[in-house]
Length: 516
Image (cartoon, rainbow, N blue to C red; front, top):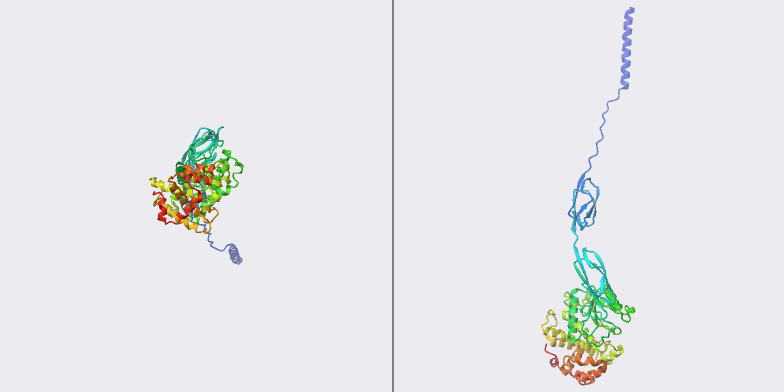
């Protein structure tokens, strides 16, 4: 009995112990929970950049593989003797290029050899130059200075059309220059630039040198050649009266200012009286001439203005013209012959004034323009200009394209008669012999004046009567005395005859005109 209790007791205690342990284990075991891992970020999109350099330079990088949106700067560096020209694959012309990678890209830096040009500078006797030239890369700026020796003055640059001793060149072609130096005690026969001896008087004399022509930098070469040709022709036919300077303006005021600087520098080089005040009264002439040429072109006006501008106080003939549209083929409205006529017309004023050049301005006016009337002064220049153009064609000199200067001298004078009578009617109360430059019918003095001169030439039967007799005696005899000597009667008798002549039919009037 005692043993049985013990076994029962042991069983009960064992149950209690087992149950107690099982409950503690349940309390400490964690629940079974499944966790999802976070996804890894996607790999970035990448693009390739390929950079190469053509012959003649290098690049700062050859490229590589880059993440999308990466900015890359590439720099091209030309080798010596080369220049960068651009990028194949991009329109930029900058040597540094910054790109953003949003696609695969390929670029190549382009280079080219820099052209080499030769400057050759030769030196005439009488001076030195700062450089004799050499080989230079295209676009090189070169300053050259000519310095005259004692007893010489600088005469200008052949090959640069400049009379300035200091010039600046931009090498874009091969250039040959010659520095001209002129002895102040000798005569230079160069028809382009003549630096006369100011200690010698040339007044009223025939000389052995041609007029000197000077041009604004914007005047094309073909206009320069045509003007020089016309000047030479006029001087050959009517006498080389010197010194003569012809200053040709273009259309740019900056170029006109530059030409004025050369004009005044020339006055200084030649030690002319009044050189300190050169710009006073001259600046407007030059700048207004350029503006007039530009305005005429812009307004479609086929007009060229020329003038003999004096020079009395300095002892030379100062001539000027606006842009010569007739010598420029692009202006069809003004024939080539018109500008040739203009140059001859203006040069004949040199012939007219040569014998009275040493007189005061008032004395000059009384001899060349009686009663201040302009018919003889302008009419003679007008007729000789018209006659010369047609005479050249008659002699077979092929200098004129086909234009209005056809049909011969009689056709040209017929047009002048119509023009003269039209303008004369604008001044019904003014006699032909009294027309002044200030009258609004002044053009009649030009056109009818040409007919008056033609009438007088026909009367004596001498085409050269003006240059042989009338003008050489103008200074000593005055207008009336020279008129009587040349034409055999008084001017008043002529006016009466000419009034009657103007009433004749044009067919009869044309009979006095040479058939050329």
